[in-house]
Length: 446
Image 1 (spheres, helix red, strand yellow):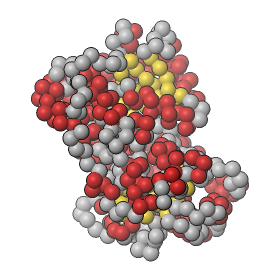
Image 2 (tube, helix red, strand yellow):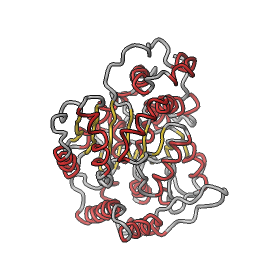
Image 3 (tube, one colour):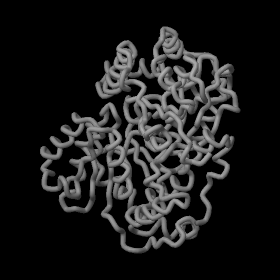
Image 4 (spheres, helix red, strand yellow):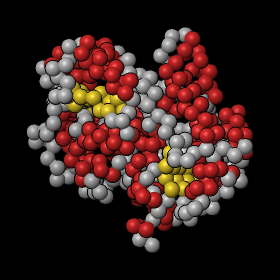
């Protein structure tokens, strides 16, 4: 069967950005190139829709509570305990299901998700989903084909694994080795675990030789290492992996920082302090700054108001921009394009930590939720990211980091230690039955 004939259902949920961002690069595998959102597809039964809406409202409400001192933080911490990821060590049996998982299965037993599975069963093709509940739907309501669950974080709670993992036929697409090891502790059979990497946008990669990534990284290193401290120290490494690309030529874009908030908009307030701190540099055109509002009109308005309040309207639309679109697919396209000329991505440690593999150094905001704490740790472990300092003094510490060459080193570390070939690896697992696709997923001298 040719690759053109390979088709699978690709199903996400419209809840934040992470699950849809993971599914977006896989859309060409889906019938008609469309990703289905399990919580708002055409014809969804009213009862199913109600369950999803209540879940989404609660998630976004609790995420924003973390910004409210004392009471808000208390409520958020209570919620976070329900989905807490236990310490990895000592290694032990963690297969016992938690209360959240039991609640989900009780709803499924009443018929939640059956309509979706009946629809999917009209085509005899596999299912790839980026949300655990959809995989549970498929298994419990007798989906006829293989079920693949794509994990969106560097570590996961027990809620991601079926009620009885030893009996489950759900197959896991893990973005990193820690997830694979965690799944074993939760009782998932090793034969159902595949390390593929996170699916990165193919338009940012440049094919199997990563031509675009390497060209963008070479350009980025010039901006991130103005004093050549990193380039002089690691000249051989750069020569080996960025062969035939001139990194001492004049850069093709101004020094650019992109600040992105999550789908709940919980950390948009940080933007005011950052903009205030960088105000003079923005007005002098010493820096390009992108504010990512995603698809949230309220976040867009907030950013726009702060730009006016701080007297930055003159720069707006020039070297100060807001990335926003009403539709998520259009937003993802704009965001991916923006990343090609971004030197530093500043964001919460969400699924975007995996974008470090594009050669992007990541500055992280405070994590929201247990999984983001682990994402932050993972990013730091591979040397591709660093936790933000006080946003009020961004104009001081950010440029100290640039002049030291630290962020150039972080950019190269993300490129070398991240996984770029997630989409191809997923295709190898789903359509070609390859067990260990990441064994050949190693950068070589180009």
